[in-house]
Amino acid sequence: MAYQYRCDDCGTTARAVATRPELAAVKGRHRQLAHHGQRPDGERVEIVGIRQRASWRTGCGALALVGLVFLDWLVRHI
Image (cartoon, rainbow, N blue to C red; front, side, top):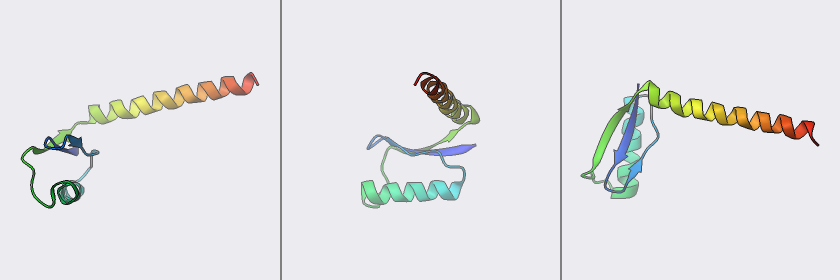
């Protein structure tokens, strides 16, 4: 399970973090930088399931595989 911080006021979504202390650091940094320490009205935390994280990782794996196939083709044809 991971946590993801979202701020609807400025339309940002932070990267998913694994622990609550990391989440608190992400929230605090965003509040300081974007809202001068104030709590925005559209602030929320979502729990990101394994399925969402796995799909991102699967996409990266597929992209890496395509890159390797292309490099293999390139080496064979040069």
